[in-house]
Image 1: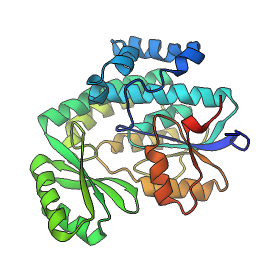
Image 2 (image 1 turned 135 degrees about the vertical axis):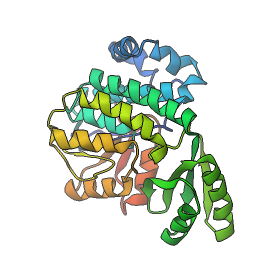
Image 3 (image 1 turned 120 degrees about the vertical axis):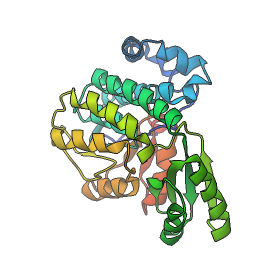
Image 4 (image 1 turned 30 degrees about the vertical axis):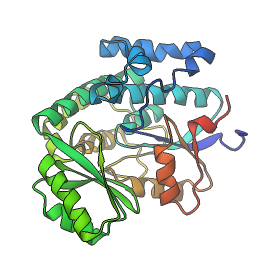
Length: 303
């Protein structure tokens, strides 16, 4: 498509669940200098991240490897947008994607973000082992139905407000399994178990949250050069200290994605959204959130 009119856009970065084997690696054939991202990433992570993305269908879906893979893929693609004079007017990221948004808004650099993600991915995977949990997407559930389902669980909370008709629950295994039965009994349109290694954005991530807070606190957060809309406080923010605290709160609290997208559109009228990453998970959500979605996937941009 013609890139005219995209010079100022709204960048949204996907999170875990958007990965696929080989994602983004074909770009290296045309733009070999992009390999620097993977080389720097491998040095920080202590293993060959490009080899994982290209060749390891098992590891690419394990939290420890998934998170840095998605982050690097998004920043590779963002660099191509910038090189082609497509710049963000504001940014946001879904869960893990918020780290890509932080780099895009110049709050922290690529290396520091990846150092946090290295700890985040390890601790979240460990938390999932220590406190086994699952996640469940509900399609077409009413507020009353969601409350009833959550009230019947031991640890069961809303993890993601993804669109007007989709929320994701997070909780211990027994509570999720009970929720599936309850959904059928009370007539929820669909209940879809998600393939995750833990109950993300829930109290079951408390051990991970403590460790991630330690490394976040050790890194200087600059004021953002453009507004960033964060998962736990989805309004345009530029103050580094507030951004840091919002990021610390993220692991145990829900992703307010509906409010994020609505606020971004309200504050930045007539600008297109671009999903900067693999696939079209966020593009599909925008189609459900916005009356007139103006969201492009990365693959729709000409280079």
